[in-house]
Image (tube, each protein chain N blue to C red):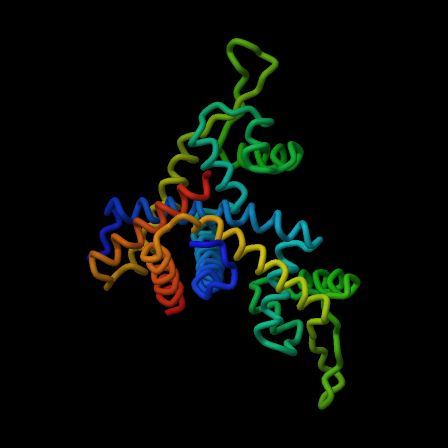
Length: 146
Length: 146
């Protein structure tokens, strides 16, 4: 494909992806609300779950947020017992963030609800179509990482 | 498909969709930054472009935001000459919002840049695969509207 941006499929893909993202965002916000957690808090939990023992500076740069914003976020998350700040054993001046048991429970609960929503969307599709959705999502995600 | 949420494809689709949305969100924020506009301002522009002459109340409910938040948003957008508040001709107590020429230019510019980004992602794929992406996105969006 030449990068012809007037290709009608590109117009359709951009529009449908934007709308689907918006709907998933609203649905996601609703799910997070059930778990009494905000979208930035959930993003922080996912990031901390993926890479353990991050410092505040590392977490801030991964979330593309200012350190002060992340500090406020972590204060609230610590009060809610989702995470805890721990001093680094080798260098006591360094503070690392650990996800607590309640944090892991929230992550699993939210993801399970999101999967349930996606299962509902896919219900009634043929196995081949579900395979297509899977392949397209995998491919898009891989291409976007480049 | 039975709604089996442990289906590995569902786990993969949820994860890939979440990651792709996050990357598109970051890219989208970058594009909006080039146009000196924030994400909520752009959402407001798109909503007002789709349905003309909305009142503040109507716009607020479509954006799932409080009236006071939307009022602040519109103040900034009016200062930036993206939109204008106009009194309804039939009922002068009703205020409606109109997208100005600069607003339309920003919408088109942002969408063109997003399409360009998607073209880059799709570059190198076979025509059949691009058709698949198009069909999957169309289907997902349609299913989510139900």
